Every structure is written in structure tokens, then in C-alpha cells.
Amino acid sequence: MSEGHVAFEYEAKAVSPETLATLGEGHIAYVKQIRSEDVPGLFPEAPKIAPGLKLFALHSADGTPIMLTDSHEAAVANAWSNELQAVSVH
Image 1 (cartoon, helix red, strand yellow):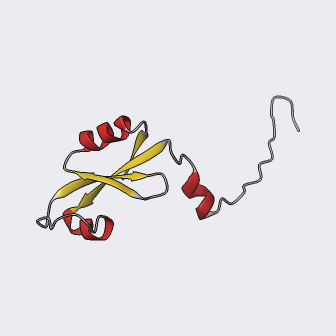
Image 2: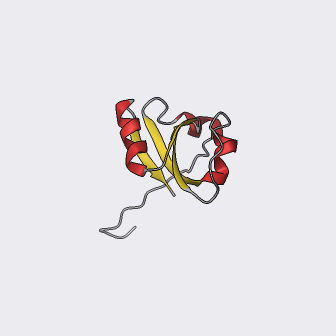
């Protein structure tokens, strides 16, 4: 190896879906924009909502739906009120 160059060896390790789902559990939630047509699958208890609306869902780190709102700000505020760090998913 020539002077001034450093070589690193990195071995990538696969992370199981189960392990990935538990990262941030209890600390991180994510906000995802959804369409009103997606609501019945995520929130079966929600009342019927008109089609074509842009909504925001707050999910726990493992993907469990927490709340549904019509504003990104309200979803983030709900995360903060539950002591969760909110991140956005696109």
C-alpha cells in the first residue's frame, strides 16, 4: 500500500426483517402520506372517508398504525406528545 492511502475491510451483514422492525421501537415513529382509499386497510375501525383525500398516518417503528390525520404537523405533534421521535417516509 502506498503512503497516504488507508484500506478498510468491511463485511456487510444482513439484518433480518424482525430485527429491522424492532430498531427504534418505543422511541421512533414514522409519518407517511397516504390516500383516503388506503385507510380501511390500515385503520379498519375508522369511519368511511371520501376517496381522493391526502392524509397522514403515524406508525410505530414496527409499522403498527397509531393515528390518522389530515395534516403532517398534527401527526408529528402526536408523536412528540407520546415522546416519540417522528421521521417522515416518502
